[in-house]
Image 1 (tube, rainbow, N blue to C red):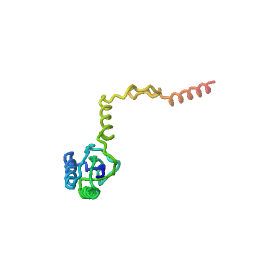
Image 2 (image 1 turned 90 degrees about the vertical axis):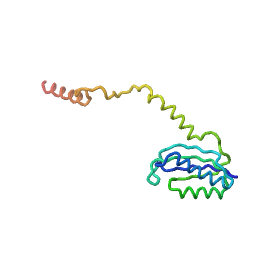
Image 3 (image 1 turned 135 degrees about the vertical axis):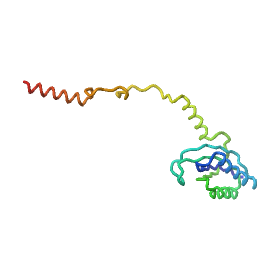
Image 4 (image 1 turned 90 degrees about the horizontal axis):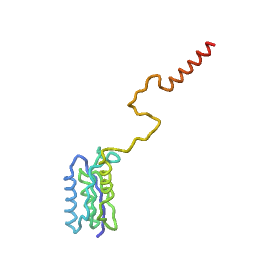
Length: 159
């Protein structure tokens, strides 16, 4: 049988168990006709690139399916009728990779980076000062330049 990868996005106001229940429903349809789910990954609640049906976030799930094309069409039809599912994308693949997908492996790397307490390294030295030190009114360059011009004009007027 052909192999497929399906990514589905569910509404953000349902929980992870309900998303997995949708996957179980797909599994029941597939197994009734000799197919199976070879891989199932829950990617979590993620931000959408743009609003879909007034939702800004969605639960993402990846499914690796082994199914006949007509059974897959029925699965996609059932998903399109489900109000909790925002989008579905199915692609035919040559093989289903058993290793974790790049989305999950990148998610693990991000957790390791953020675990350091938010320290981003030493502050680079630059020409700007921090906002903590208060400068006096006369220290600003434009006032110094104006005062120097005023002094030079009074000196020339005195001569």
